[in-house]
Image (tube, rainbow, N blue to C red; front, side, top):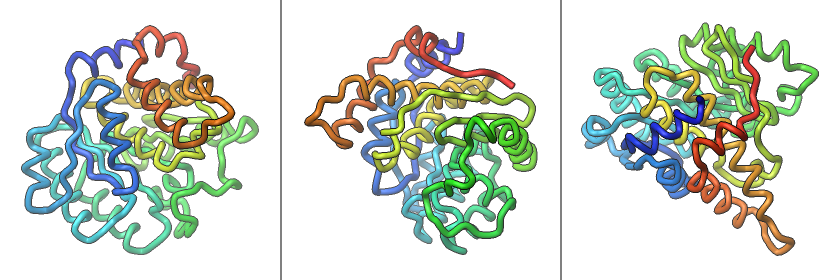
Length: 274
């Protein structure tokens, strides 16, 4: 059962080192707690490698990137590789500046990533499918994965996974998670998730927790984390009233993960494998 992957997170309670954006750090920490893991945030080069040594997984998020954070990401990533801990990359807005592209290029050169999670624009950029994409964190609608473009998108994203030698999770209206051979096509989620800043950041932290607790099933762990986040978005929306808005919805999403059982996830995960 894929729901067993969530059960493993709750049983093992992995400590996850998250170097993330200050915009969503609190939400990411609460999401990690909600799934049954434990968060630690340390983004100074003086301690990044040492802190990651006591953790079971590392989540690197480019959100509010600085030179200091870039150095910490590099040091922590190398140390995690030495310890054979999973490392997740969330290349937020990678096409927005040369600094972001150069940072990712250096990370890809020196750090082995277990999984990369981003929107289609970000993943295309780091796979060198496009040179630049200045829109920042939002995916270009012209590139969005739809039912009409799904077959082509699956093959395209499989190619990115093979090129980057890692599991790639492209999230959007339809999510695709692949190791280059198999692809999970996931149809969980709700449009209101896009009204909350940082749901992608929360998901990347969730992926780190799932991979840390299930190191032998990285593809499945990544896919199940994506299913869990999408399902949480659906459950959260059922609780909304006319007086509620995106702030309430954000809390309901975290609550949904907190209260989700392996059986709930098994029943609610809406995916196919191609």
